Image 1 (cartoon, rainbow, N blue to C red):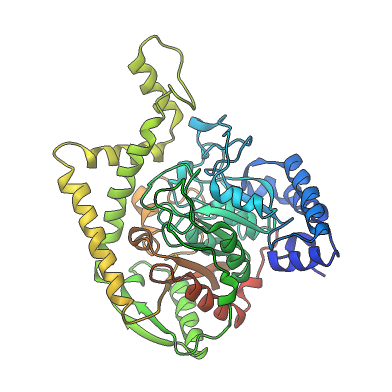
Image 2 (image 1 turned 45 degrees about the horizontal axis):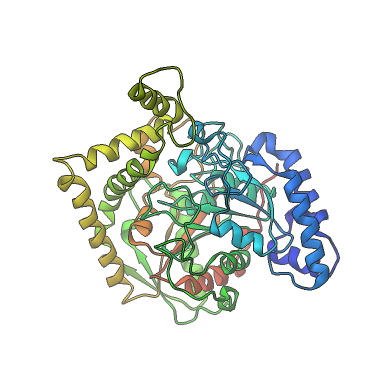
Length: 485
């Protein structure tokens, strides 16, 4: 039998309800695993051992009473920009290093209502700004497949914790690829839901029109089960869609015969590593052999998505992060009697380099005389990108692309070259701009490192995406590969 920390959510659930193991056993096994590997992986900002064991005891009682859910008693890591009541929520920033929220984010409270066991908060790029998990104010996270390489970002801690077996699953957030890209680099499954499907209440905002919470899991079945738990309308979030909860596991039929899958040429970008291209092309062939019809399609405005994103996201970030002024909460520079100097020093010392870079980009784009030339233009391009997707989805059911143009790269390689770092998200950004759902599933290896395939669908097509992802996963062995740590 597999070690307890290696169990997927659905395997652990079966063992729990059949009383072969207890949630306390499972939680202790994950805590032991954290003890073995965390000093090398560094995926956690905060580990909540006492809370976890209390929740595990409560979960065992729930299971004994026969009112458990698919997630009851199963350990999870939460990305450290979702509010957790009584538990430090830092956004991996000095600005919020000692911030302890008095409420839970809606997605977190939904998991806790389902009986989840919270093992701690995941490391990330500061305020979600980065593609490598090197922009954390505390320490970089390492990729479990090669500790000298990055796990991707900004949900790097979440993806690394799942890949290394520290938790069964994690919640991340995705503004421009921050769930899918690290999932690809760490060889796990990551889903960015349709914008508004999962409540953003309690998610510390980076770019409000792009941010979305989603699951990072070991396989597609687990992904569907977590999605079941976290979706649903939330009156506390004005962008929350009026959707009734549904059972996404019903979509996992394994049958994709007759589905039309589009392959957009624009996503096989110049500079893409040959090994990544080969693995994704092979996966597309596998989907065809499962009965899907594969057709070439074109999304011509894709080439403008990167520029469009890096005007919209920093603009929203400069507005959202204006609240960190040293007055209301967070870090506050006290060594002066001058109010303006206090605010200036607070932001200088409280924010890291990348966050300051994006605030300045956004403030410039929104400033008088430049608003029309940059921000307004970017919003017009956003409309064109959405229309591109809408047109293509009249012809096909879903799109198949690489998740990342490269495998995990060495730590330090791109950190001083922002443009090279931004290019890493070239395949994931357009999806956030259009508010669409997309999932990354492992589809092979290159240079001994995982490669991810991305499936993109029209609004609220999560069931179709999970169906294709699951059918592909079940026909291959990639999702079973685990790093040796």
